[in-house]
Every structure is written in structure tokens, then in C-alpha cells.
Length: 432
Figure 1 (cartoon, helix red, strand yellow):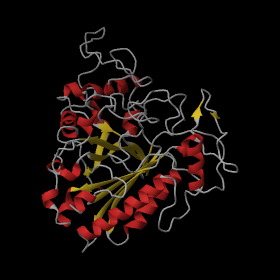
Figure 2 (cartoon, rainbow, N blue to C red):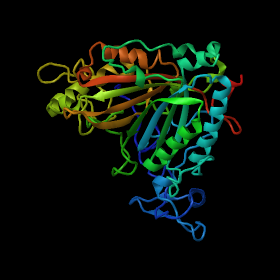
Figure 3 (cartoon, one colour):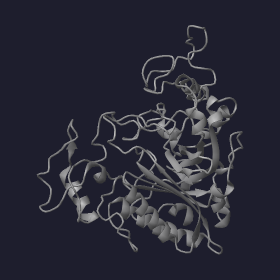
Figure 4 (tube, rainbow, N blue to C red):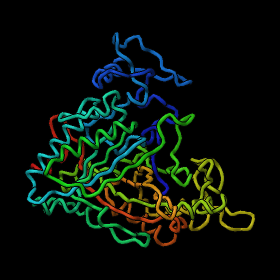
């Protein structure tokens, strides 16, 4: 798990103390439609004070109950890039992959992406799904819902679009920590759903599944979670299920080279991938019983950072650059040679970087009492052969963390740029 990820309560690179980034207000929202609630939230333009109390309700329509800050957050479906890439971590996530049904091809895929895009646009705006909405999220606002669509390598052969398949979708190499279940890997189509409310996220998953009809069948589906925005005293980097602060060195949109590293340039080939990105998805099981048997100092040596603050073992705070030359009283490196944080540094990997936006997962307890838990690792980059692959190869050669994790599923997906108003995701590929 490379030492990069986003803050759980804000988009990468946004100011560290802006609790109003996802929208803000307080109060109940019972018995009011999602459309009415969204209109209320948009009308107020609220900001949160230092105590978290909302102010500025004078402009709320009479008789309408304002949304809380979590419910009012809204991401945009239409835009240069698809949603669900640069937004902050979301409290609930669903990942689902589909394979085209027998006899389904390019025409059916285009109709499906058209339906999915229409549904995503409505749900992300806080409105009901266009077809058979179940009412599960009736009382909630958008809750920062994002829905993202991607294409797997196998999609192109099944739709007669082999000439449009990017070389960046070439299969990932094998790694020593791989114990991959092929039935839970890859897929023709991939959908990522994230929201700050579990019911909103589930409603989106159900709507996407119902829209699929007979054109595709589910290949695999996974559920994840993160800390709920506002659960900490101030915005901070997320923790994973090992208890470690995870993501201090994630690229930020404010970085001068962020777009170059994360998004495909407009001039690249194939043209339909302009402003898109590539998602590597890995289900990484954490061997928590073995990990938790370690002492605190041993855990910190494996990672190379303090568990409480995330500061490097060479000193300072979470954001202090790691001093790889510093030694301890015994003359040993303060940050061990095989420490995870040392190995994953971009300056130790030819500048390789990726935007990590994961979810934790817990799928129950095995019969022997072992928790089936870990990380749904999702990373974004303009080219996985220059992002994920070199870092993972380096980890493969001696990462101290490798003893405590197991890669159990894998996927690589081409995620095209965002759809403009009146377009659907993937239209330039499917109608080009």
C-alpha cells in the first residue's frame, strides 16, 4: 500500500481547515423530497462556524427543512473529468464490475452507458432515479455522491473496438504478494460509487444494477467505508484498519505536475481517453492478527512513521520531509531500509506517483476467527506503467509490510474524461 492517499474530509490540496467544503447546514430533513432538500441547500449558501453550528438560514424557503452539512454536499456529474477521482474520501463506497451478456455488443453497451449516465446525473443532483427509484434515499440530499465509469481490457474485444484499446490497458505484471481470485478480478465494465451516507450509496448501487437490465451480468461487487466527514475535531489524513495514518504524500491538485501525472492529456491517443485516467483496483487483505501481535515500535518500524501522528521516524510532524540519512543512537537508519514509507517515496521510484483514493473493507470473520478485512486500494494515474507498476515492483523486492498483507483481487480500467452536458460517459469511444 504505497504511502499516498487523500484526506478523508476534503479534496486533495484543499485548505486543511475548511469544514464547509462539502456544503453546510444543520437541522432535520424528515418528510421532504430530495429535490426540495437540494433546492434548500443551494439557496442558503451556508458556512460552518468554529463550533460546527450552522448560520445564515434567512434565505431558506418557508416550510423547507435545511439539510445537514453531510447531506448537502454535492459533486458535479458533467465536467472535464469524471467525478470520484479528485474529491475527498467518502464514508461509504461500492465497487462493481460487469461483463457483457452473450450477444451484447457495442450497440447495447452504448445504450447502457446512456442509461447509466442519465441515472448518475440525477442521483448526484439529489433527485430520484429516472426508472423505478426505490425511495431508499428519499430523505437525504446528494451526500457528495459520485458515480464513476470505466472500461476493462476485455470490453474492447467483445465490442469490436480492439483498435481503440489503449496500450496502457496491457495486463499488469505478476507480483509476489498476489493471491488473486480471478473471479473477483477484472471485468468488461467497472463502476465506482461513493457517498457520505450509506443509504445514498446503496440507492445508487441498486439503481445502476437495475439499469443494467439484460445487457450485462455482475462479475463481482465489493463494499467499503471510510471515516465519516466531521467525525474528527479537525480535517486530517485518514487511518487504515492497521491504525496507521495513511496518505501523507498523496499528490494534490495544487501541485504543478498533478494533471500530468493523474490525467491523460488532450493530445494523447486514443483520443477518446482525453482528460481521462487509469484506475488500478486491488483488494488487499490485511493480516490483522499478525499485525496486532507486533509491538508499537515494531509496527512503526515496518511503516517508517509514528502511529499516533504520522510523522516520519526521522523526526518532525506528518508533513516533515523524511530524512533518509538520519541515524539513531546505534548508528542504524532512523527510518529502516525496508520501511514501507521509505520504499514508496516518489523520489525513490523515478518520480512515479499516483492518486490513492481507497476504501477500507470488512467482509466478516472466517471460521478460524480471522477477520476478512483490509483495503480496497484504488489509485489513479495517467499511465499505470509509470504510476502503479514501478512502485509495486519496488515493494515486491523488500517492503517490510508485505508480510502483513495479501493481494486477493485486481483490476485495471480505462476511465474516460467527463461527459459534457447532453453527452454520456464513453460516447466518443462508442460512437466515434
